Amino acid sequence: MAFATYLVLTSISLGLSGKFSPKLLNWQFVKGLVGWFFEVMLLKVSLLSLRSGEAPLLDTVAYAGYTFIGMCVVALGRITLSYAYYLTVMWTCLCIGIFMVKTMNRTLFAEARSYDSSMHHYLWQQT
Image (cartoon, rainbow, N blue to C red; front, side):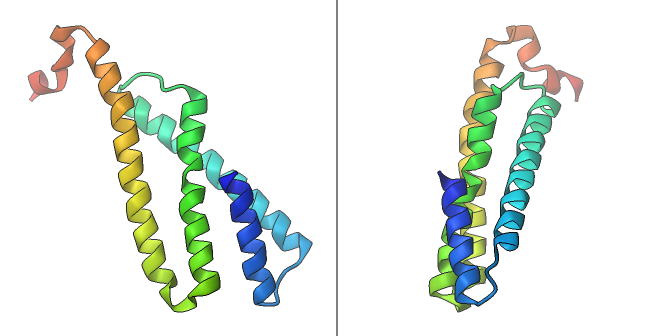
């Protein structure tokens, strides 16, 4: 839903500036899907590099999809208050970052508790 809302809001923004065309809407769709795919891959790679185990794919896709909520807020800010665009971008980046850290903590710590206690502090033993 957030992805569809993002497409509608960017279409409205393009329409208000007189630049709307179906080709641009298609381009926004493709860029959104490619960005979503790369974000999912980045989350999967970062979780695997932390050796935190496998997070379910649909959970990772859902976590990455929350980015579009921030993008919708930015698009609304651009439509209503064009001068506050950069403040809105910084605020939403901060909010999405905090959200991702808090939600990924659940995945990381759930996997850490399931490990053997001798391997739980493996990083501390290496230093």
